[in-house]
Length: 203
Image 1 (cartoon, helix red, strand yellow):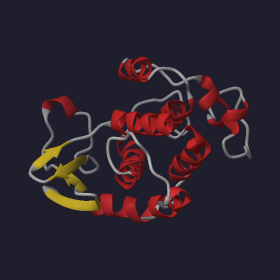
Image 2 (image 1 turned 45 degrees about the horizontal axis):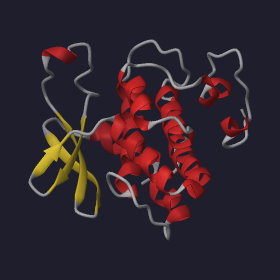
Image 3 (image 1 turned 90 degrees about the horizontal axis):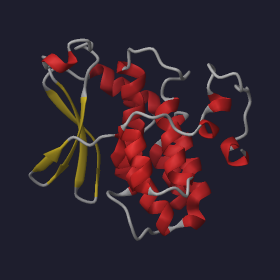
Image 4 (image 1 turned 180 degrees about the vertical axis):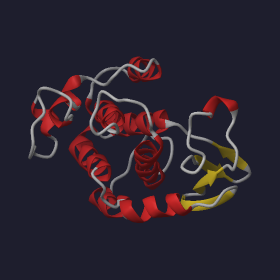
């Protein structure tokens, strides 16, 4: 689904309503907009707030950003020959492209290690980006603010560092390595316009 179409679905979601966004290999991804917020989220806009869920049979749970990053790291370790393709796909989704269209690049490829189907991961990626654009209301050192998240996605695909060490850094809210964001971050002195795709692989 195109970025703008997905964004519109999320904006129009009614209170206390679920909406299935993607289903693949027995997993459903859906969103839900609660009419009331818990005390933890009193600074959130109730009209914009929404939750992202996965469903497998009777099991329902809320994934977080780490699910995407761990999955992509596992895939790249099992298929290092597809690193550039994976970076291209998930960068293009970040830039607003349709996940289904982007996944055509690897439609005949297989991976030995992953958490969910690549379609579910790609749609999670798209919706988490929308969540940050639509709901994030704090000052960020990144412009766009979603670049913090995308920097970690790039690093988890590209970096040879161990997955547990990188995951700990993410959980501790440490930023990704500057090489994955600096030239694309409008708040960074190294910012450049008209960058080539996968520019950070040249760093």
